[in-house]
Image (cartoon, rainbow, N blue to C red; front, side, top):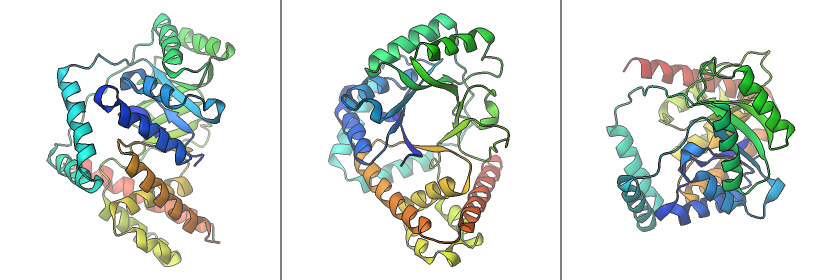
Length: 318
């Protein structure tokens, strides 16, 4: 659990505030102790701060500077009411089917990448506002949100160093919704979308991955697991191939055991789904951990690399 974090992009206020609060509570019950927020995630910092009252140094909190949220309009508020009602009335299985149907109808278009604003005065003000919203004396990690290669200027680096010296920030780094190669080589932490990005052996930053389960192709990953010989060595893993939750849990463990990603962020709007997923992922972990031959790590890494390579080729061919 030390290598799993919770991405707070789905913590929302308004009609969804109560369910968002329950989500933070469930994450804590599951053993998650790392939370990733951002001003651009709307009310995520405020909701997280309320949920972590009294927890103190038992958890680590990361937030960002550079991108900022706009006040929610009527359409967003109506959407929140509808989502809250749907989740309250329908079982998780029905909600998941609706999500899958919507995803299958959406065109997988490449969105243009937006970049952050790293004016030093704005950074300083943003950090103070985040600390107030989170109700914390300091941040464990602060990331430049969507920086250009040239954005970590000398002035920005000096300001972030001052914040560390003032003990308002523990670690600094960079984060993006895109790949690792899109990030400047700056700071101690790099947060990026997990994919085919490879880490330079000389790069000693802490690597945090997100988006692992976005557009999960269970069939393709199952094939990669089989081709890597994992099921022959560990037949117990076959029981996870029959449902999407099990496949997601297997993929998470394959990344944790077989790659150099230091931490993986989970994100969901359902506390029930989070609880079920963490339970399944823990069972997969115990099955793998109990296997004596550590070459299984190499095989898991091979399956992950093959899966990312196939999915990347498939998306480029669309």
